[in-house]
Amino acid sequence: MKVKSCMQKDLIIVSRDTLLPEAGALMKKHSIRHLPVVEDGHLVGFITESDLRQYSFPAREKDIRVHEVMVLNPITVNLNASIEKAARLIHDFKIGGLPVLDKKKLVGIITAIDLLSAFINMMGLLRDSSRLDVLVGKTGGVEGVTRIIKEHGCEIISVATESHSSRRKLYCFRLEKGELDKAIEALEEAGHKVVAVVD
Image (tube, rainbow, N blue to C red):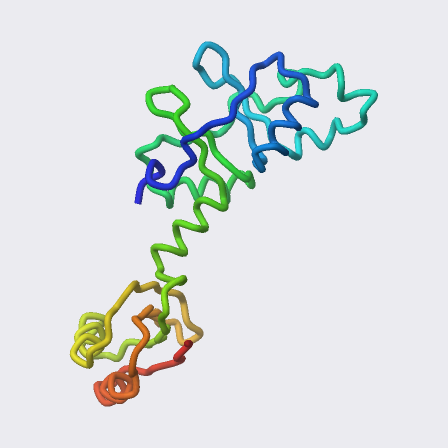
């Protein structure tokens, strides 16, 4: 999935000369925590709720303008980048959101919440489902596990992997809600180990 599929496109922006109380009022009114700073259609900075909090003393705040506290040269992401790349940037730089650019033009914002929602949807976590955690046996591989699950009428929504204490990969199958007992029995008979079933 690409950034353009889950970014926010209706942007609230400010200029370099916007006063901090105005920027704060915009954030509050629109329930947002990030504001791109734009001049002549180009991104020149980024200001966040936490930036504003540092200057939240009324005597100081009223005369301070956005350009005095904004982040210059903010980390950005291209609208055609993968959501994994955006998530890595947010994680690595410990930030809450990214301006999204297309040929240097600001076209959106993507936040940690937007990415979390995208990953939740991709994994089918909001659907009525079950999770089957399987350590794959020596024969058949993950393809064999998938075949057995499908042969027993279970619909696979998504598959994820994680490390296991046995130093083998643990495959986590998100399945449509249904009867799993026969599939589990067949997996065990084929030499695979079902570690957990989570409803």
